Length: 83
Image (cartoon, rainbow, N blue to C red; front, side, top):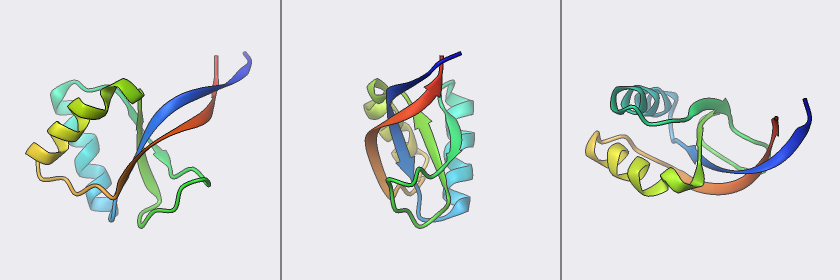
């Protein structure tokens, strides 16, 4: 497997509770993504972030807003992945 750079949407949160609420919201709604440690390129109040495809930004933002999940930032960055 090779490591390649892939554009990813990284969502950060002000608290760990908010990050966990995001994970629950996404699983309940069938939205893709997974919890990751906050990448070093990003500063965040909590050490956890949600990683998903950049194309999911609007749908994810709407779902989190509907569920009242506070978001610190939504950032598209290149991350290394195994492919």
